[in-house]
Length: 294
Image 1 (cartoon, rainbow, N blue to C red):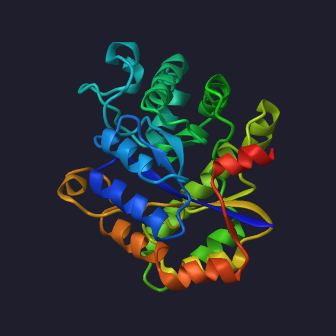
Image 2 (cartoon, rainbow, N blue to C red; image 1 turned 120 degrees about the vertical axis):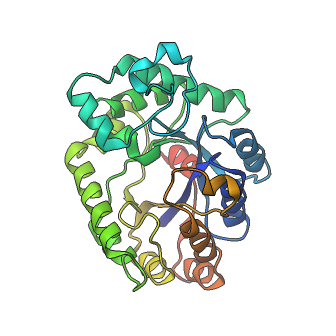
């Protein structure tokens, strides 16, 4: 059986992003999302998810953007002089190598993020990471430990399948420089966390069999998604996406994913794409199904 999880990252980023994600669920192929506990539109995101019964909601573990959920004085190694997260995975990896990133503080912050989501009435289907930070050495083990602690049965393993990445690359509109840079990042994750699925299995945490979406983040095309759907293998695959509406709040944030979010929304709700899922015999699921099948 060919199962597909289509996960929309960044629920809670802005109300426009929240609205686009829910629309992609109601009128498109999105089945799952992941919620930023420290997002500026967290409360709106919780409300949006509540308006979409059947939409799987995970926790989007974050160390890169915004304020901490834990008390700032308890997670100082994660923060800049403005008491906010500041730095993508590369900077975090460097700080980890220099022993300037305290793992007990990472665990304290992520525990607080998960608890905030649960306190809002959401029972998370899975864990994943903002900018895939949960895949960094030492941090994946923390994510697995927290999944067990909170009774969360699944985790994203952000290791791209090369054949699916090639299929998703179809389409002439992509920015080759961006795709190449992100492709290098995807390959780097494979080197850093090549045993992640085995680690999760040993911990009793479920994963999808295949994953795709890093290299084409912000560069999805309708042609690429169509070719991807034709290439989905037997088992369970996750496609990561970032739909949303551009609003004033989004324009003020540091994310480069602006107009691309509306482009993805159009692709994910396209009638032809929806019909292709059906004609290919693909079953759309979320991570709760993966956990139940384990």
